[in-house]
Image (spheres, each protein chain N blue to C red):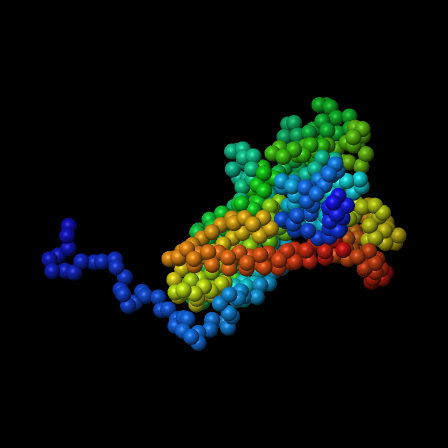
Length: 255
Length: 240
């Protein structure tokens, strides 16, 4: 069954030249971020609720060039209603439009994003308030420009609040990228490609609780502590913007 | 200490609140009773908000969060507009815009017996009262008031039904009469049924009047009382 004598065996190791990520010349003395921000500066955030008429609740979020729309449907009768559940079910789906990424036609469902969105929101929703039923969260990334998941999570939290789903607190999410010994908050796509590691925190700022922590790459203990502190501070500020958006809507509708 | 804590709550009354906001610290309150309505929960020594809306207060000591949403959470004694989606031997299945379908027993009508079971076709619009709304169970409805009389409940024939938010339906049922209904009622004659589940049924002699009333109500959601009156006047000027 072995190959013919003298034939070179087929290997699965990638070619060292073709598949290597081209890292930008980051952190030289004069290096600035591609969009001109400081290392510890987030992109301007914009939120709006009630973007989708047909949904129970919806929200639109824009972080720089990253644009996301989230619709929440339900609580509605669970398809698994035969199995009685005294707490509600949360169903999350994240998809990308075909024009979301620079390479056209790559729009698809992201299974790992769905699972991470579910984990991030599950701890904030009071599932006991809607037994036997399901809440569906559908996120659509209109334009992907880095830090997509944190934007999706924050936007989904706002959409859930807009739908009147009982929650312990609003959920805010921020990510940090590590380059050598430096930390960059809210990285864009070019920065994500060249990063050495990433840290994403999803938290409930009013309760000082973290619902999700995702770390990739190599991090030292001091760097992790610094990155977490950076994320938590940013989450607290982001939550203020989200609250002001919700309060604005509440005051408009009930004047 | 007591006055300070109660005033902190009073400061937030009629203000917008969000999930996670702490509206009262119980550790500073001594010998006081408060009743918590929808949207508030006790979290150790704090009262925190569970849903976005406005904090409301009713004397002597009841607090709740009032919000406007598209979905409806059934509560006992709510009057709602339902649509019959199926009929069984013992009950009708009714869609009341809630998380689950509601049951309307065939005997839950004035003088209801096995001999005179009402016949509702699928799609019939009915005005009903929620009598049971326990978590984990389908709500139960009735076509009678508390004394067993049919009152205003039953099937709604003809007319036009449209949907709005739960906040707007509460506004339409509020007393004194909502400005938009007050202004319309002075100039036009029509019949209206408002369900707390965000469904509104309008019937008038002409389709023209029905459309005007429906449009005026739909437009009024984000307007103040004065703006509602102006809007109705402009609408009526246009059609005369």
